[in-house]
Length: 393
Image (cartoon, rainbow, N blue to C red; front, side, top):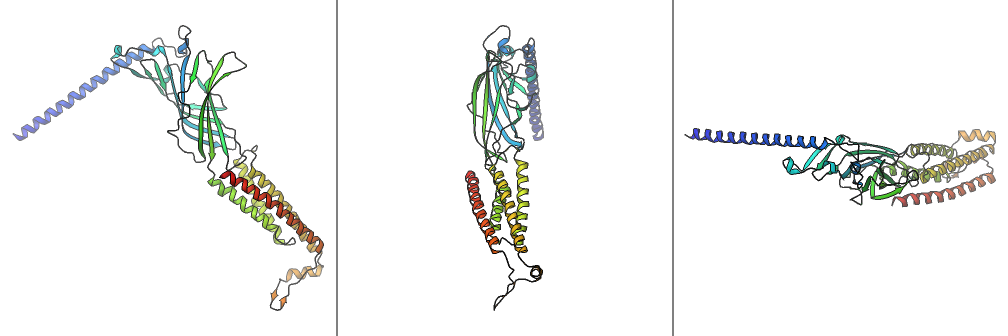
């Protein structure tokens, strides 16, 4: 008896599941039939190349609400000032040709239609660049005729950069969008949001987004008597400079200290020539690295510092060579040979250091020149370092 009762319960459950599945399948098929009929009716005499405001008779311009959601931003080529933006463009407008009575289509009040089958506003970017968007995205059409479209976009554009305070620079980039063909009698652009949507923003590795804004402009161009509307999105960016502080600013500061140290060495020291040469090579390498990042037209304080440091180091090298030449020429030939073989020695009885005759007046003059260069470069070095570090703060 117990086994029979279990079989009866199992049979009842199985029967209920089958009934539920069959009813659901029929309901799904029923909805598919009604949606297919609705789609065919809506697109039967629909012309996607004609804006809603020009359908049949002249009427009010179609209002297109435009909102931008920023996902990510980065410069893909700073040397050529090329940036890339990833995000979504929310577009909404009303198309009276896509209205229907939900009661006539089994209560269907929203319909998903392929974007290639309906009219779309020709929103283009006015900046120099390209916009790659998902053209195969669908639009959501409501029974009231309201159309919503949210395509994902990848925007590559040119952003003029100011590298003066690199690597502690701030940049401002603008994205200008509007209808390319239609004036205000056909399309009116509006923005329901006064700013860029940052709810999905992902922080960039190289830049921090400090502020954004969106501005609606009504423009009249010389070519045409009609007015055109555009919406300009502005991005305020601050460079993430921690990596460049280690790669550029710290080596520049250390190299500056080494240049100052060369002026403290004796003018006739051969080691001074060697140190100046090594510093010159280091400065050239840092300048080449900076040139790979900053465009040739970019004017930077750091680049000016490297150029001035190269000039000072070159000048210090010339002074060192002249000093060493004066020192050698003022020494008799035999004492020159013996001075190369002997080392300076200092014992308990006093200084046994061999002294070579020198032209004291010339050496003193070169020491004075070294001191003047030390003071000038020291002032420039401190001021430049203060400006760069002050910009960082």
